[in-house]
Image (cartoon, rainbow, N blue to C red):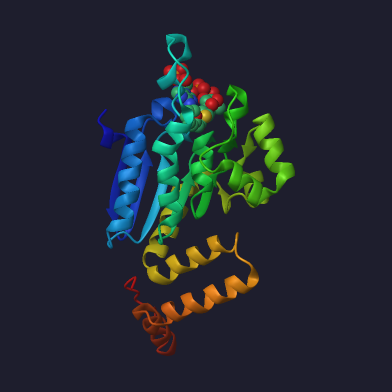
Length: 264
Ligand code: LHQ
């Protein structure tokens, strides 16, 4: 398998669909897959034809996190520098997903474990098949939650649930993840891709600039005071109000027709 086969990418109607593609290893991440995903997220930043990203996994799993076979301790040698792995592979990609001012939808088609779960939580809208589960598998191998998991879990769920999930590695079924607000929706397995694709298409046809600024605002709210947030809303609304899509949205409303957004 070549590096590019490890992440399948198609661009259609503004949706960049990315499929993690090492199904025989439950789409666990090796270096090829890390770099292939990174390249596609960079493309999503640079290519104005990309107006939404849809991330999913091939086969029965979404992703089992890091490929544990890559660093088989039975082979001996010095202990690996996992901090370096995070700094080199995971962290830049996670930052790029959060910084991307376009919607990133994640369709969790099956088990999401370790960094695989936490990459899903870094996306903007997460749908999961009802059969999927999320596992903070780190505790089972002596590691700490990474790929932003300690941040997402603590922020979204609060300490009690975050600690219990991370310390026990107990699988969290998709429906409970939705009940707890960790993901947007759990849907019937057969409905997952149709629903995720429809959502991605509809967002890709939306006012991309405004949607991107909205993402920036909501992410900033976690660390801003209300005063800072009000100032930021003022500034970004000023910017959105000057966009062609705003003019089109209001015109379409007044003319009682569907808006045709260009993403600018
Ligand atoms: C795998 C994996 C896997 C390789 C399934 N690797 N082959 C960051 C920095 C640097 C390093 C360390 O880590 C990190 C972040 C992390 O993500 S650490 C956490 C890594 N992930 C895990 O600990 C999860 C390991 N996997 C599992 O616990 C199970 O596979 C789950 C619960 C995900 C699924 O269980 P099953 O549905 O029973 O499937 P399975 O275990 O039979 O897996 C299917 C195949 O996939 C199997 O291969 P085989 O050749 O025997 O059919 C597994 O060996 C392989 N696989 N996860 N992470």
